[in-house]
Image (tube, rainbow, N blue to C red; front, side, top):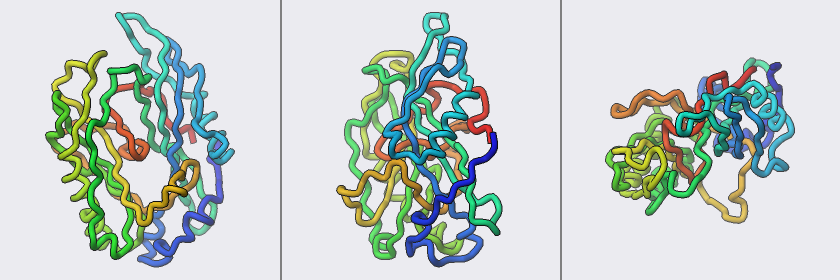
Length: 282
């Protein structure tokens, strides 16, 4: 499929946080949006239908990008009692726009990450019991540093967090590489410490009810002056400097994108539908 060229950054790049900083870092700035919905897969793994949440808020070119991608997707058949069956799953897609040619203003939109969770059957998902947000680091708040920390957690069968690791930290400010390393650590540390105090309700039935532990992905967002009246940023481009993805020493490498989880939610790793074809055809 021909790549979509979209002029997406007029608003996203206008903030003062991105107005300064080393050129090499500014050229790495991306913009992304997280699109959610549901998808239905036939017994043979073909997609038979999908829905996007709040589609009226999503730019038309992104709606078309998702439509085109889903026509080529194939999934591993879902087996129940040894038989392939139809399945419905939650879907979250990370759409990223990048400047392919730094000399031009056009940006290309790609689907770079996805999570296809289970169909939401009661008792088969892992859910939060107690989740206190981390305190905003005072130095970061004073410097108006913003970002999102993507955590990987290992949760035991009793719902307690035994390990927490910051897989990736995307920054909402620009600085030198050394400055960004400092700020990533400043945001990651309190997020990890807070996560170690959280508790979860593990699955009580289904294929994972007796798992000895669970690997969970969780985003933690640090944003200055969160306004509840303007908290719905769904369908809008958010600019950031992507951080490197790190590998948790206690977890196997996963092909899933660490940042394809909506803010305030969680994703149980190695569950849900398994895509066997490329995520993005462009």
